[in-house]
Length: 517
Image (cartoon, rainbow, N blue to C red; front, side):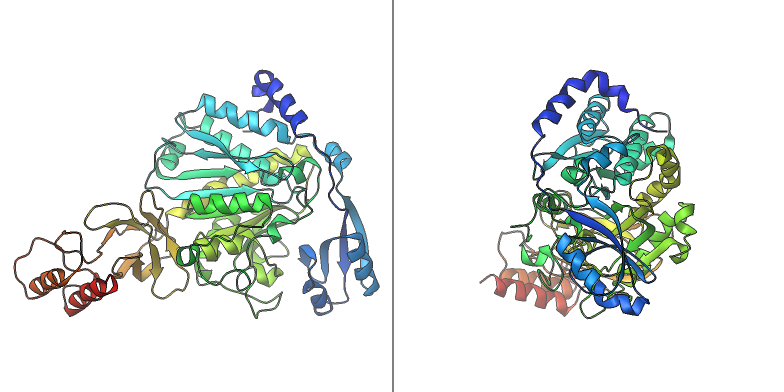
């Protein structure tokens, strides 16, 4: 089932016309050549892949690059076989290929119409404006969307590259089915009772309007996020510095949104290939073309396969076994949203390439929806794997912004500050978790069994060492811990580190008191 742009067009045509006029600004994006470059072998192609050019695909010994005219001449001078495929920006080409696709001017009114029709299921807002003043629309879909809830947030972001609009359509198909099917479909009702779905259908509206990969300043947005080891080494939780200053407007908006709305899982839609690409895209010291597994490689392979197995053309890829690939193994990039979101914010993200053709004829969109529909549902369900719970202040019950680590893995996740909920994706096994928050005593939960199916719930309360509730941590609290360890009758929980009453609890309270002096 496809949404019908004409459904709201008559009512909101005037709005669309005004928006179209308001955003008709001069286009000054530098010319880009889309070039296919072929080398005698993959090894001979490697030096090119290590140069700071925009690479959009690599297959065997052939790469697709976006090059400035100067870069194009340099590549030709290197002796590679080249084929000029396209020149961007190309507004006329965009118009010729637009039949069947939703235009930028239609997206805002379409989402607004859904919000009016389904106020108890969705909220529409803008992340902010692009370089040329166009809105980056987002829609939140869940039961009671205005209330903070202990549900995993699943995000679908599309079209960071303006010439890759298939994902925009998939997001709109998905949104309409969730909304129109809610009353009649028991599964959709259950999904939205358990899950928050966020959609950003069009993250690069300026590029989309003029059919070019880059934004209005000529930047590739998916090469413009902070790069690990260059821009950051720790997480946002550890540093408190988002690192969004001085970046492209669209990137800044997405960074701020990702940080403000913590996700349990995210997807990033592209075209130009047909594969699920999972982290890492880049790891210092590992060359392009070599595997760069993350600490959650098993989880990423599983959730990527959950998508690919339900998209048969992707799964049956003649290029990528089972339709999935480690990003660095395919080709390495820096500045991608996927690695940044996972490493810096703790949100697992997979990049899904939905079509070998960047912008297939619009008549193929219904078929592409059939190929991606079940995959999008299945991927959203993976947010419910592993371990979930709440992290609260032991004395007040208030939600905490906390770091949650699996003892055997380097990559943490973080709670959502408004609710205190966390969602740690894990496959079946036994895990030891560590909970940390500023000014609180570190808490341990060992031997947590994870089975197939819904996540096991582990709620924890963290203590700041104030065992007697007098607003301070001092020798009286240490004595409270001693009394509890000695078995004396007490009215408080003195197991502050989660490992049973012992001398470690006494020492933890003493250490916390000393740290506050």
